[in-house]
Length: 108
Image (cartoon, rainbow, N blue to C red; front, side, top):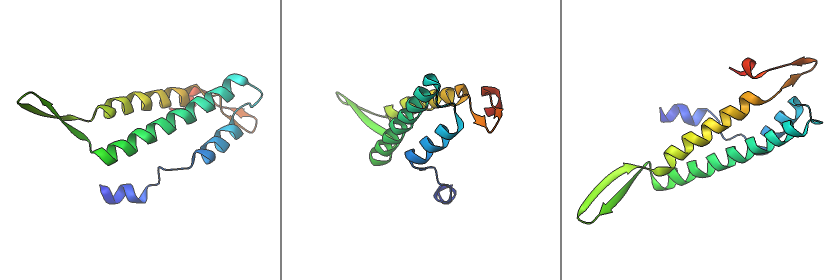
């Protein structure tokens, strides 16, 4: 599994994503432009959390008096929430391809 993730690049630069999305939306529509900004911000947040988890590990040890618990890193839950927000924003884009317009249904 680890070998597969090394071959698959998921760290596409934010600028490349921005350029791609901006070329596919109606840039005169302030709502669509704002969605691109929110989308990029969510990706940045997700990547920060991912770096933190890679640094700290996927589990954390919690001590409560004489008891010790190993739990999943709290950021894992937050990463799922941010990922859901990213997907929702993706689905709401009104993407254009030349003269053809795409809807959220086309992204599924």
